[in-house]
Image (cartoon, rainbow, N blue to C red; front, side, top):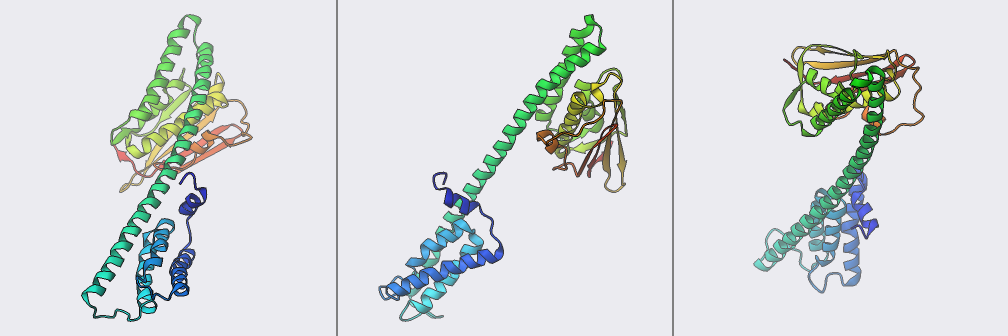
Length: 318
């Protein structure tokens, strides 16, 4: 399919119900007219012209359209392309012919549907690979920037003799946070532990204030929340409150609702340089939006500092 882009695009195109019905009707009309113009079915085997169109319908539209096309094709061929149409009573030869027709149609529909799914799954895999590559490049660039910023932060806030141990500790904390992102396999995770892992590489001399009740969040929310907190911390180190010596981030969270508790986190920066909105949106900006596991991510760049509200619909009271 890679070498026939027109067919690939046709398989990947999503069509409306009206378009689907129209193409399905043509899949019956065209082979009927073609056979009528050739010999009006006098040579026998009246169904033969329909098979390619049934396969194409399954390939381009799916089995839900191909199955009705097969049924209507069988009825039309029997009614207009046979000298003696088969009615309710038929001999064993006619019964065998009808059975072979529908068996052949079933095989063609199955083959077309499987090929259609395979092409679409390959396209989805290609899109995921592209997104993962973009995310990998973004994370690699961010990691290099973070390492440089952490070195500057450590040099500014640590005596010369303590620089190397402090800097090594932050690099190790960054490694642990990254490891948690890719190896976390528990059903739930402590919100306090997750937050501390996420911000550990960026904490120094009280630059973070954490406050909120202990609770747990589901596995589906852990990775997205880690990425969002990691992105917010990265931005704060590069452009926001953590870039300044006296800058601080207040990260608080609260639970609401009794039957189905909802967790809301509030990120507030202050004491940093004036905020300048970016001229373009990059991969990091794309992370600061609602996604699977995070029902709301409201990121705002205000003159005094960045703010972000994050909601997780499902939480567990510890």
